[in-house]
Structure formats: structure tokens, C-alpha cells
Image (cartoon, rainbow, N blue to C red; front, top):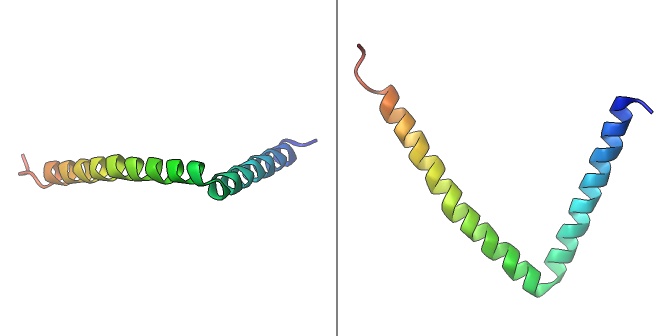
Length: 66
């Protein structure tokens, strides 16, 4: 088995496991609520941190030239 073929098979296996897990989570109401709550927390934390970082970087780059 070549390296490329092994990578392809591994990617297909991981994708299949992800699809199966998503199906189970979306079909089970308590897991679905937990997943959506976790998504809200993740978006509520990561998006503002990203925006603050970008604002800080833009502020630093717009400073006076030496």
C-alpha cells in the first residue's frame, strides 16, 4: 500500500466517523442541546478574541513611521 493510498483511506475513515457522530448528536435531543450550547460558548469566546487581536494589529500597523 502506498503512502498516498493510506492517507486517502485514513481520511475516508475519519470523515465517516465524523458523519456518524454528527448523525447521533443531531438525532439525540440532549446531545443536540449540549452541542449547540457548546457552539454558542465557542463563538462567544473566539470571535471577540479574534476581533480584538485584529484591531490591535491594525492599531500597531497604523502607528507613526520612525
